[in-house]
Image 1 (cartoon, rainbow over the protein chains, first blue to last red):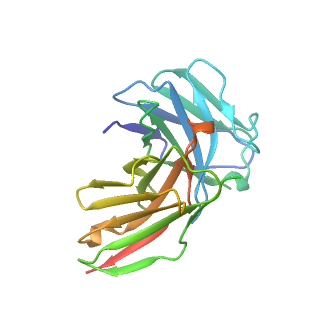
Image 2 (spheres, rainbow over the protein chains, first blue to last red):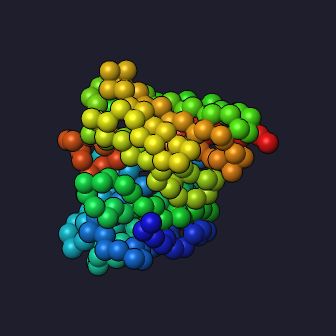
Image 3 (cartoon, helix red, strand yellow):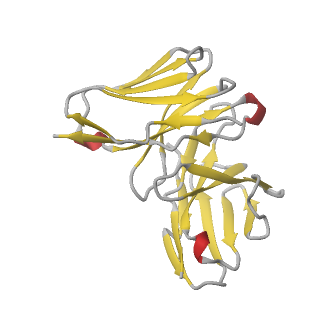
Length: 116
Length: 113
């Protein structure tokens, strides 16, 4: 199947700093990528839909100024958590879809963010 | 708003038995429903997709059923193995939000040798 690479797999940062997470589709072009957040023993919550060359579409309740998403190319989307706080500590996962009509999502390995 | 329910309690079964996991939803039937497997600290991996006009789908030891009257999908793993131990998530997409998948909380499956 298609491969989605996410980096870093884990990161620890101080409160107030910004952290960037990269999501790459390695063997296909992804015009749309999705960013999810997952707390322990909870479901994946969609944060935003990232479209190549245009602004991301954020879900209700997700602060677009805090979670900056850039989808500059067909193979790369980035999520930047700005001015991170301990409550932003979570597991962030990106995904991409090859064909819109199949619906199947290919997920990255996830990035564990811990804000001290 | 749409609600997806999966049994939050872990399912413990003996190796070789059939595991059956349930996914229930409220309100409108989705255009399609998917099942994913997630191991601890990893991203989900796609297993099966079933569309609203399909009743059953199979892939090797996996079988998914979709009952739009009951608003329920069942996910079966036959001849289960300890390696099948993981959390299984169902995810739904509706025509109104076709691009978006909404996930259930998942059910943890533990297969004992």
